[in-house]
Amino acid sequence: MTTPLRLGIAGLGTVGAGVVKIVRQKAALLTERTGREITVVAVCARHRERDRGVPLTDYAWEDDPVALATRDDVDVFVELMGGSDGPAKAATEAALDAGKDVVTANKAMLAHHGQALAERAEARGAVLRFEAAVAGGIPVIKALTEGLAGNEITRVMGVMNGTCNYILTRMETGGLTYREAFDEADGLGYLEADPELDVGGIDAGHKLSLLAAIAYGTQVAFDAVELEGIGKVSIDDIRQAADMGYKIKLLGVSRMTGRGLEQRMAPCLVPATSPLGQLDGGTNMVVIEGDQVGQIVMRGAGAGEGPTASAVMGDVMDLARGFRMSTFGQAAASLRPATPARSATPAPYYLRMALMDKPGALAKVATALGEAGISINRMRQYAHTDDAAPVLIVTHRTTRAALDSAIAAMRATGVVAGEPVALRIENV
Ligand code: HSE
Image 1: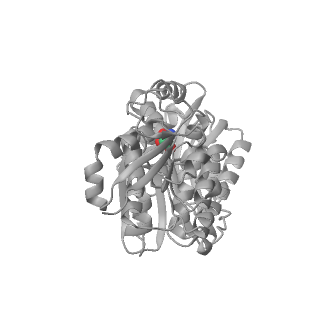
Image 2: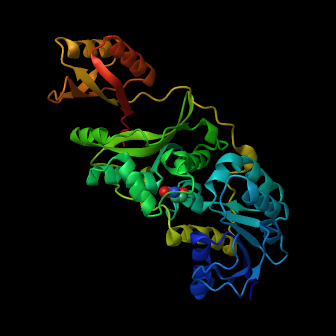
């Protein structure tokens, strides 16, 4: 009989407690599938006395995550504390230095230190895996590193923050303002302790940068992700985009181009009938395009106890089976530095503006677009309410630079009230 695989778990929040429950309640299944018993030997969290809905008395308790990570009887350090630096990073580094394998759900730590940690793991012959860090229960890291490994990946897209998708969905279906939908999500406990991580697109940007590293064989480049949150999305945009056949999503897109790596996490329009357009509520979706496989769509819960613990267990069970994959699917030393593309691939754009009721106003807007080389695909003007009327324009493919120069020219004509809104349309 082989020896058990012994886990030390740091962080006993929702996910940590979920992992302990799976190990306790599904012991026979785990052993049957891996050929090895999986046990928890020690745990660590900030508050020892808290009831987590699972008995912990069988396990040694450590107050210090570094002490837990380096215990002689721990084979795999399971890091579920979170935070890009501080105790999570210190304990992960200590575990790797001690030659222990690490399984983590920590997207922030990997987005900021992924390359250094991957190199550190390899230098010690240890494995560092992070399926639970991206899109919760969706096994997207396994899909990219294993099932799709024979493809050149051409584009990776995803709605990877369930809280933002919930807020945008409630604005659309409930007619709520951004603030009302935000407060509702807060009341349901969806928001991170620092809500900006969610609504500022940072959490989803972390995830996108990790997928891009695997997809394109580049070093994680979170700092190069173009980030824009959902705070400026208005109910008018949601309604009027719907009127033109689109939904607004906080969508991450990465692609490798001749000009370098594009990584963008920003609100954009997708066709309402596309799989991404039909993704409602707190669910996640990842879309991967490969030169051989075509398009793959994966949909599922991006957070929560069961789904995230499921992803952690997938990594733990790989280790129990003796399967040892590099952190980003190839040797850390072979990951190339990512050269960020300085401009985005041209795309159609949605433009919304309030146009004053003056003869020739619309012609001036059309001229500004025409002079910037931008062709109009579709246009709609709603009836004037006060002294301005909402005008929606969908352009043909253009660059953001051309669009910005057209917007500046439109504003200079004096016929546009306020700031026009411009959102990219992603063809999916
Ligand atoms: N806060 C994230 C979300 C889950 O709303 O999807 C953790 O990354």
